[in-house]
Length: 509
Image (cartoon, rainbow, N blue to C red; front, top):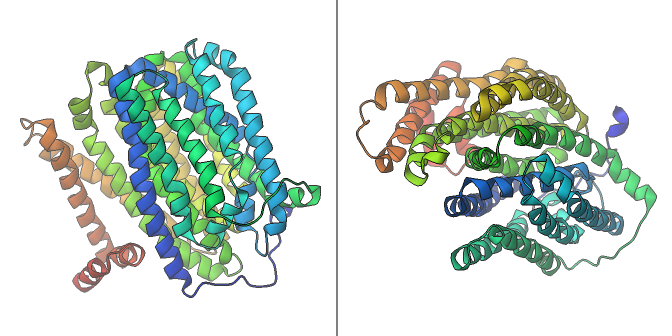
């Protein structure tokens, strides 16, 4: 297994003036960008679903599932390898760019010609033409300038934000224009194609480094040593997420699949986007600390504590607002979302926390460790997916995923503790105490608070219930800090722009 680790160069990388400050600035920039753009993406699918209904939403879900599946199975892991590798990477650009272009073209061809078979699998013949148009998206993205990967490697997250922010905006604008001028199934497709074209164009405007097609097997193999484990981990992770979609899509109707697609987006997107932000900042930051395990362990504990408390808070808000959101925006055909969304929120929180640990595995050149736990989850999914879906429908699927997520979270932290030479309890309490506090908050709101405000309209309770639940959760965190002496609020204050908040609770403690 050691041959999966890329060699660490003897020369130390050039450090920014303030390493922690650069990481923090990067997190804030990415957070601002991702929150705004992913809000647009979520709003885009939400508006599409309200206008077009469950059937068309299910068809879009089939197309997105197919695209992501083929992309992951064709994943090379080259961009991750370019970020993780120390030293001058410019000599790798021609080979990496060529590999990326071939990959994008191959994905497009696979998606185009597999469209009829995929449509038959989902019992949705209308999806075939949609899938063929979706093939344009990976073909475009395959020609993005490979040199932009260096923005993340050098912690230049301002440029990353500029590069990434436009595509979702263009996607949203074009989709809305199409929906409100001539609403049809393809309105969302035109938006995504326009966003992909924009991303390619801006990648060359943002990066002036020379590039060209080229190939060198030795350099490709060096990148692929790391990238193959990114591929393996990605495939297993895909089978856990989209594999479930393919399985349940075969059993459920297209309308039910539409409900699952929208519920998953509403429940999981906020936490997975936070996970995306943390990984994009933490991965290059951890990579720079890979030779200093004590510093890496300290950085991980601080980051993981902040990520866990925030992710679980988002999960709690989603769980408490789900029923009122459905009552406000949807008709009776969407009512199962009231139960599906809270269960999928638990699954999303577990995935986000799993991603927060996977960045450590990749940073130290051991991405195969993440695959071990994905395999456990995949085995559980394979055993449970058919009986849970056939007997429980949408709710059975959601309950299965939430249970798998919580179970595997209990297993994975021991390896992280061993890798970072930490007591396992240091990680376990940072992971599960916030979950317990969130569960207690949810129970108090549902049993004590909700009956008091039962007669109020959903437009009010959608704000009241999450606010009360979050307040109880925050008080629970303060009590935990006082009893355990773990600096919860001080850590949040050091990671988030809450210096005054941190000082206040430090004095109160």
